[in-house]
Image (cartoon, rainbow, N blue to C red):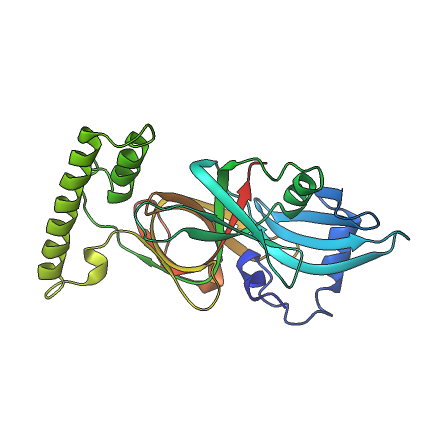
Amino acid sequence: MHTFLRAVGFSKYKSRKQLEKVYRAILNSPNRKIVTSISVDTSLIQFEKDFGDSIGLCLIGEYDINSALSIEHCFPYIKGDSYMQFDRIALSKKSDTESYLGACDDYSLDEPVVFYLQNIADYAKSKWFNYSNRSFNEIKLSALSVSGTIILGINKDVKQPSFGSQLKKIHDSFAGGPSSEGLEDLENLTLDHLEAAAHIASRIRKEDLLSIIDTSLIPTGFEFDHYLVVGTILKVTEATNHFTGELVYNLLIEATDFIINVAINSLDLQGEPKEGRRFRGEIWLQGHVKI
C-alpha cells in the first residue's frame, strides 16, 4: 500500500483488496494512457486517472510479447500548475522498479533538490528513441503530504530578492566566464549572507525560529525525495475525490524560490489554509518534466 494514497482522498483504503475496484476503474476508463517500447519484446504502459481536479492515481505496468498485462506499481499524484526552468535536470532510474528520480539545482541549498518523476512513460519513450541525451530544463513541481499545519505568515521586504535568486543571477553572469563585476557581486552577497546569519543568531535567542525563517526545504528521512517544507501559500483550491467524497486541499506554495502544488487531505491538515499564511509539513516531492 502506498503511504500517500490518503493525500489524494483515499484515507479509508488500507489493503490491496480494497483498491481492486479503484484499479479496475483506472484500467477501464483512464484519462491518459501511454504505451511505449522498452525492449524488443516488452512495452511499458502508464495509466492515469483523475479522481478530482488535478489529483489522481497512476498505474505502471508492462505488456509482454503475448500481450499479457502485468501491473508493476501504483502511485498517487497531483499535477503542477506551471513550468519552472533550470539549467539542467538530471534523471536516473531506480533499481527496484520502472521508476525514476530527478534532480535540479537550488541556489539557496548546498545540494540538488530530488523529485519523483511523474511522466515515466514519456521519459522511457525518449530513451527508446535515443532522445535521452537531450538536456531537460523545464519542470512542473508538485507534492503530496499526509501531515501538515497552517502557520501565520511573517512581514518581510518584498522588494528584497531571496538569497537563492541573487546567487542564481551571479551564476548566470559567469556563463561567459568570470568577470570582475560578477566576483564583486559574489563577494558582496557573501558578506550580506554572513551579516544576516549573525543577525539571525542574535534573534534566535529570544524569538521562535519560524518567525525568522519565512520558507525552507529540508531533506528528511531515508528517501531522497522526501522533505520538510515551510512555504508561503499563494493560492488555495479545494478538490473533492469523486470516488470517495473526501475533500483534498491543493495548496500552491512558494518555498526557497520553488513553486509547488501540495495536495493534502483535509483530515490531515491542522488550521485553515488562506493566501499569505504558511504551510508546514512533510512532503513527497514529484515532478513532471517537459520532454
